Length: 164
Image 1: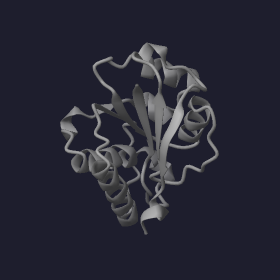
Image 2: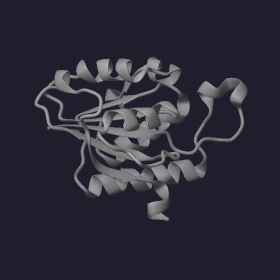
Image 3: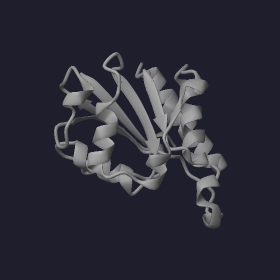
């Protein structure tokens, strides 16, 4: 089995859209990211690989998760294309290039793309993707090359309001 964990970045400051790439997390965003990541740690869902959009709010969310999950922050792989938006097909191409030695991969990014990925990778997704939403998707395959649209099973869907 291969597992992708999609994480929409935590709540960001509601200003600075003229420099959207560099928008920072709010205090609530940092708290939400810590709560969700600590829950995943308690569940024993550790990353083998972490990939993040290189936008400030996404990479900061990824670093909070990395710390909670005892993953080396220096090993987070930044992918600028995630910020700019990938089609589902392009996103699947990124997934299919992952090393088969990895079983669990966390990917951090943005809406509306992350909602679309959850919707298109899963057989059925009826959730919302507010900030810091975290969706675990299991694929019954032994190689990332075999991941395809509509074949994933939802393992979990965590949202910050569950922990308030």
